[in-house]
Length: 286
Length: 318
Image (cartoon, rainbow over all chains, first blue to last red; front, side, top):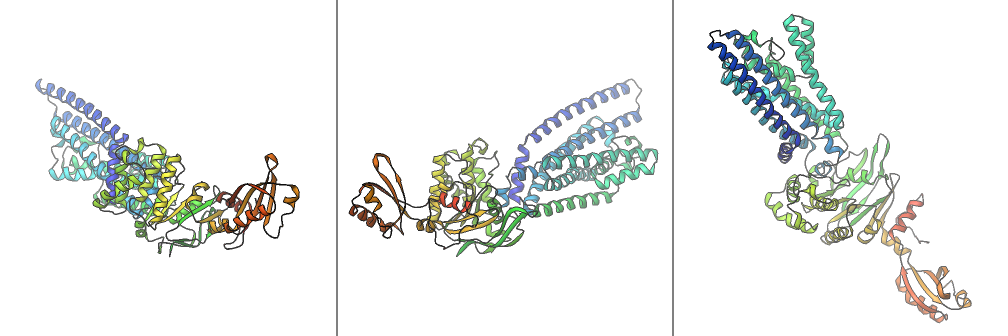
């Protein structure tokens, strides 16, 4: 399994999709940093003119933090989908796995090796992205992260990593069941469903409309990636202990944070998908 | 001892195609050729034996172990028909990767790699990316991947399909060397000329079913013939006594010569035929003993719906 994981990690890190994602990430971080710099400049100017408005400053800071986390989450998720879809189905189609599966290794080791190889790559990337977003915000808008503790950073990082790991497991399952294109479409659609469900839940929560909230909850159960994002925002901004948590409400924020049970559910969800991927690959004729 | 044994091994796809009721016995140390037309089920059989396909029914053992025994594959090498490898790795790194998959230690892999590269004639290309290899070189590095563990049993699925004549000779010599080392080589190939030179044992699959298996040279020898070019009068030729030697055919050649084809048991009869023809007053210009080629035998089996049973008397008629 370690041999497969090592090769998968090296191969994923060499792929163009990873390089493109890194370049996009650099571009995003630069733009995002410029945006924070400009808004912080305006805030400083207002303060110098004696018309400091801490509430507006807090609101802008929170929304910018949410936007940064959301886009970082999107990049990490897309990388997870693209990398995992290409890891099994195309290798079955082009015969690359024939020489591997015929070796004295269990098929489960191939799937798990690929999963952990990609998981390490995604974890490193996700940690880096989250770290950069938090550092930039801490520099320009320290008030938006004033309730963030060291424990919050650690749990936030773990939640941020869990999100691509869930998507990885889902995409890998479909990659063992269908051809690459079909698997990619299904996995991306599911991710989109989770995303839209998350928005609907936020709107329902603001309007106090339980039917919308329920739609969001059901979509989170089908694809918990967006719920994990909302949980991350809740942890980073410490929604429950923050008297200014109303500032977080918005498309990228969180009104009612998902419970910790959602984290357990997401873990079980990923493990189940991975187990099904192993089962499906074991039964597959190559 | 048998390297491969199958009993009514069947692999079908939703009840269609594949291979059916294959009962095969491949002796250890033999070079075994699997023949059949496109879509006959050869690759299905090979894929079942190397663990890529799950059999629908039947039994099979590889080196005395069942197919479910993953670890018996430590002693098995396999070159897939559609060879495709990690093209971003160098040839040497690819061999290291496949060595690791076999569970070999770093030292063993390092010791083995130069030997394998020499086997497949890629010593000077070890550090080049596999993606930069020609198709023939990719097939050869594929054979190298199958040999890295020094296997007792080697499956080669169309091993020379992408090779030029020099590459084919390299592979042919390699197979003969492996045979000399007591290894078993199981080859699936359409290139009958290649198989003819290296295989003794063959199996023929037609429409998913095995129609022959055995030593093809024995049945070929049973169809031993001698072709003689002679000149002489019509009466001398007509006077040849059929009861002494079986004259299968006679054809007119240039300059009034005739080609006579005699069937005989083996080459020990050749001097007697020559002596008899001289005594009959004929002048001899050429004597050429012939056995039926594998290609002719193969075509005979493929055109004959029933095939022939192992050990039955067979005389090839051209």
